[in-house]
Image (tube, rainbow, N blue to C red):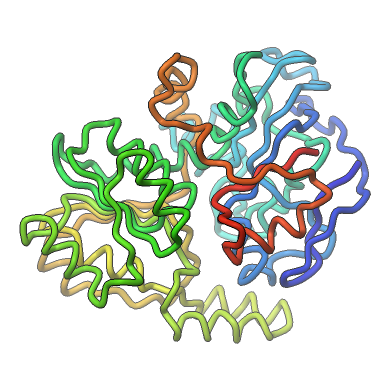
Length: 394
């Protein structure tokens, strides 16, 4: 089959790889019909390369049609249309019993000290072949895949794989009081959905911050108040002034480790990338730092007693934090990988109904064949051609 494989920094290729097959009784194999590029995939394209090996298949936002199931999978049958969550969980361990699916003890990558295995996401998370491919083996298929209706375009359902429940969790963790103000740093795909979900769940005011014109315009289309951070000298100060001199009740950081700005963090990440993989891994594991300009801005902008919810991915071990200010101001901080299936039952009625309050079909800006995935990665990373979200078609 054809699949997108990693070969080095800024070097991904569509190649022939072996077809997946049933290996465990709880496996399924799906034929992929749509698979998206996630902002987290761009970390693999850049700073997380030391944790990949040439030929690794990328991608963790797939959906498709079930081709085959193992004997331990009774809830699916060939022909079912499914979305595959990016994290792999069993539904029967101690963590899954508490709906902490991203920490599943059955698939935890304990050798790396990490949580549940993820599709297409480095040796840190199990080196599981990903979904930017024609076919995908799905472990723990007795629980993971989400059955969706036969009707409606793929893009109505596709984002259940990751970014829609990730945004839902970010908003839930932000815990904006009814009628309160929510600010969203970063209007990429997760930020777009976070802003829309915030409005839907009762925030009186939602303010989105970014510097990419197409992202700002998309948010405006959905009734979001926007700020172009390239026009602001003091982003936290501007937000505080804009919201009663106190700041927003809650702030979501939907950016993560590769934020614009943060030159020292960028230099450290680049330096690690120049080392041999083993040394780079050691440096990152023991002394890694992130570009923290957005996280620090979120912590400084939120009102006293407010909450900062982090959905953007961070990977540093030695990140400096303004703890004295966080403590003095009573800031609450919540974060973590999304527990996808925890939120699906709440989200599904919003996709299946006729009013589509989250506007999920207004996110994808580019739909391209899998063969053009290398060009799509470059376009997405460099934010060219108005690119907000790319969906690939195998």
